[in-house]
Length: 160
Image (cartoon, rainbow, N blue to C red; front, side):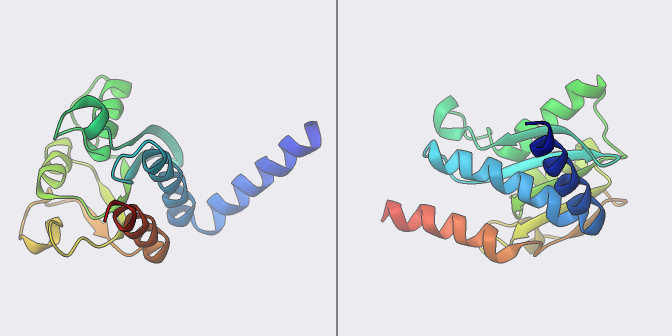
């Protein structure tokens, strides 16, 4: 058991050091898979500070009967509670799908430093609009895009 834990720890460190964006996006993908398994739209989000996950969530819209219970909203609430603060200026949020305008606006209000997302959302994504994010927020899309996109496509294929 001990050797297995050491092996897992080495994989964690190697993944974290070689490509932290992919490492944390993979963590968000695990949450998206959990949402998929619970018949929620498969979107996962993690919030990180200093290479440590402080918040993680997946969509809970169906379970809570709440159209605002997106993964991003849940994760932002957790992170704000973690710090007992409304701003997250040193944090990075990883999301498997480009945020909608509601979630991008929440990211604005939380003043999150960096946004990394996987698949682009051509219909409802925030990049269709200008100046939604906080001016100091840096964003990058397309991280593990094929994996993130495939999970969402598989979910909706099963619904049709």
